[in-house]
Each structure stands twice: as structure tokens, then as C-alpha cells.
Image (cartoon, rainbow, N blue to C red; front, side, top):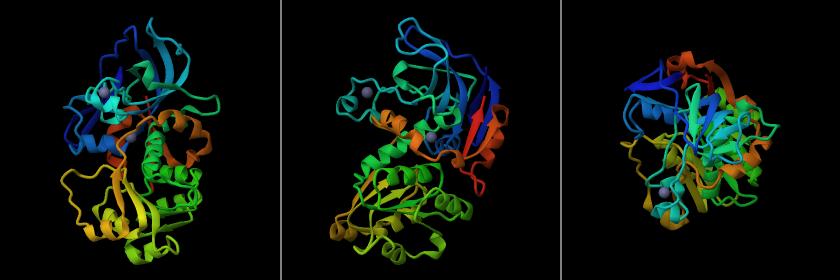
Amino acid sequence: VKAGVWTGPGQIDCLDWPEPGIADDTVLVQVAFCGFCGTDASIIEGRFAAGAPPRVLGHEVSGVVAAAGSAVRDLAPGDRVACNILSPCGGCPWCQAGQPNHCARSFIAAQGLAEYAAYRPDQVYVLPESIPLDHGALLEPVANCVYAVDRARLRAGDTVVVFGGGPIGLMTAQVARLAGAGTVVLVEPDGARRALGLALGVDAALDPAETDPAALAATGGRRGGFDVAIEASGQPDALAGAMMALAAGGRLVVVSIFDPASVVAIAPYLLYEKEIELTGAHATTHTFPRALKLLHRLDLGPLITSVEPLAQISDVYRRHREPGRVKTLVRP
Ligand SMILES: [Zn+2]
Ligand SMILES: [Zn+2]
């Protein structure tokens, strides 16, 4: 089959690859769409540990079940589905503690940039009739955004600032709104992405170059800042700004993948004085079922900048950071 293969530093190519085998307890999915994700770029550029090349990438998958192993119940050929990259073991200490995203033995079937991909049934979710397959490919990142909002312990009426207007930032802004956020402010340098954020319903979209942290905090309300900050930009300056923008009792959730070598100076006094909570949201934890129920409430169409054939995968990677681009879907 044709597949998008990470072949070395800064390199992804469309190559011939063996068709994934099917076992009694797996299903074979004919991939309809696979999102190209910033995480894929991080892997290609060596900033996210994911084994060694050559490897098929891609983890934002929708498609149709092509074949199901003899032990598989509840899934059948023809089912329209979306897939979770993670298949936690259920038995390791992290799984037992309810943190399957940290599973020590997780079976990762992140081979979605291909004509066919194999999954265990617990990784596969049947899409409602109302969800088109291109939107279904966004179930995985939406589940990530739901987890970020969970980690923020968002309460109805909370003020929220989102740093970064990429796919995760723009979807988290929408999920936060649906979860009851009173005000949602987007901070994003790209004007086209700010305009998209406003079209998707954020209350304000600010350019970080023209907004000092004190002015940003003032937009968070009378308590002198925001209740929740979501860091979805991966920019060290944004993280420091996010701490400044929080009100007392504020929660900051890092959902972006920073360069592992980057270091940010923060003022511990702020942690003390404002009782700020600083945490992260790594992948997903029990959030796929809720993301599936939320999908029809999200405005996903405008986030899909273009759909490209798998043969163009090198080009998709090269262009994924161009101005105004949000999500690229790849169509095998
Ligand atoms: Zn992703
Ligand atoms: Zn485990």
C-alpha cells in the first residue's frame, strides 16, 4: 500500500509499504482522511520520541472498516469510524491508576497516513450518521482538547485565554465555550488565524506583539486576569505571558509540544501569591467517548484548510506552518 513514511530528519515521503496484517482481535480500516498534525512535524524534526525511521506516521484517522478479525464484536465491514492512536494495556501501574495516556506498554498503531491501518477494537469509534468522514478525522485532536479542558477544571462562567490559534487552540476555544466559559480570548500572531478565531466565536483575538501581559490580564475581567489559560502555541514567551494573564486561583494547561530543550523563566512568587496551578494535558484520557458526543456541536469545516492526496505528503509537511493554514487533511 502507499504510505506516508518518516524516512529521516526533516523527511517524509510517500512510499510503498507492506499492508498491515489483520489478527483475530484487530480491525483493518480503509483510511478516508488522516490529519497532518504538529506532532507529526515534531517527530519528523526529532523533537518528539517516536521510535526510529522508517516509520509510517499519522494518528488523526477516519475511514471505513474493511475487515474485522474473527474475535471482534460490535464492528463490521462498512462501519464508518474514527480511531484513537493509543491502546493502553490496562494492567500497568498507570493504567490501573486511571492514567492510560502514560501507559508503559501502550500499543501505538499510529500508521494512519496510509491506505489501510490496523487497530484494536478499543481504539475504534463508530461515527454518527451526521458526522462526515472529514470531520471524523478530527475526533482525536478534539478528544485532546476535551482533555485539556478537563485538566483546566473549567467551571461555567470562567474566563479563558487561549495562546495559539492552530487546530488545537481553535478547537479548545470552542470546547471551552461549550463547557460554559464566560469569555474566551485568543492570542495568536497570524492575522488570518485571528480572523478565523473571531468567526468561530471567540470574544476577542489579540496579536501578542501588540498586547503586553498587563493589558491582556485586564481583558480577563475585574479579578485582574483569567481563570484558565490554555497554552497551545509551543512558544516559550507565550507560556510566561500565560502565567502573567491568570487571576488568583488560575489554572494554566500546556497542551502544545514544546521543544524539549526550551526553558522558560517563571516567577515562583506568582505561584505563591496567586495560587496558580501549572499543568499539562498529554494526549487523551477517557475523553474519546465525550469528544464523539460533542463533535456535532463544533464548527470543524472552517478549520480544514485543504485536503491533499497522500502522494503530496512531503509538500504537506513543508507547507504546514504557512500563514493562515490550520488543519491539512491527507486523503490516501
Ligand atoms: Zn495530532
Ligand atoms: Zn498500561
